[in-house]
Image 1 (cartoon, rainbow, N blue to C red):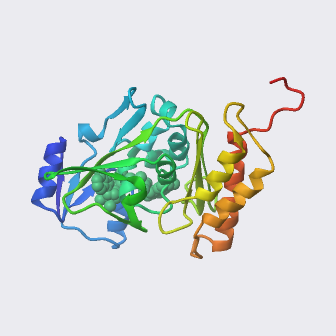
Image 2 (image 1 turned 30 degrees about the vertical axis):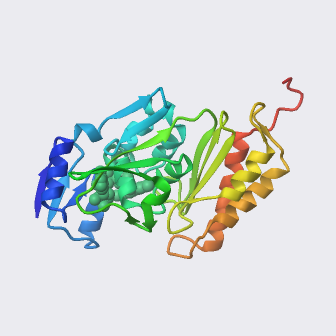
Length: 289
Ligand SMILES: Cc1cc2nc3c(=O)[nH]c(=O)nc-3n(C[C@H](O)[C@H](O)[C@H](O)COP(=O)(O)OP(=O)(O)OC[C@H]3O[C@@H](n4cnc5c(N)ncnc54)[C@H](O)[C@@H]3O)c2cc1C
């Protein structure tokens, strides 16, 4: 097997163009497991986690968006300054694996694997992220909603590299929660990301591990928007159970070795309710407004 380490984006793209069947390696925390277990075979590997263009990020104050290079690690996402721009991505990053995994694993690798259980992915779906792809033929941008076509299946073509993702920097609550069989080092059996845009008066809810791809819960989002007072930061408490029920109804879970569909649906109901209650906390009795 040939293993080549690219140091620039052009070099990585040239290597992939020369060997379109080559497999991209970033942190290796998914790929090495698959190769070691014989679930995947490859003759050529192009290592991209030393490519400067993929290791960088940029906040554009004009559009108030954050472009995150594909080789940015979870360890980098969970701390300042990146955590300040995307609190939900930071929360998701803190739940990933162990410190060793978070130091190696990249956001591009999470996107590339496209597991419905990937912790970064509900955040990208809730924030309507855009995935940036490049090859020697040019570049293209794909809405995250259209990026995964099924479990671990994506629109990435041979010779293409994920160069990064762009997300909006929102003014409002963002939260990510997951449940698994234990508290640490766990793949989510159900997960949810809630993002409130106080300026745009939107509430976005994305669900992980409960469908072939990451799902949105549009009916739940509408219920929340209609019941919310974005200026006061409050919500009609009677809407909260309806919101949680609509979130559970949007899930398309299956029974598998990690959980049952019924448990997953119930978990989504609980996670969604908790996130909405954190986003719009009930006023303290007696507190002046
Ligand atoms: C012990 C352990 C615990 C884990 N815990 C979690 C967890 O809690 N939550 C979670 O979400 N994941 C977890 N994972 C999975 C893994 O860490 C993540 O999915 C991680 O984000 C993968 O990133 P990577 O850089 O290691 O990807 P790699 O393994 O290098 O690559 C993953 C896939 O993406 C492709 N790829 C990578 N980068 C690019 C690119 N720039 N362009 C195109 N394709 C690319 C690769 O070809 C491969 O198919 C865990 C893994 C292990 C081993």
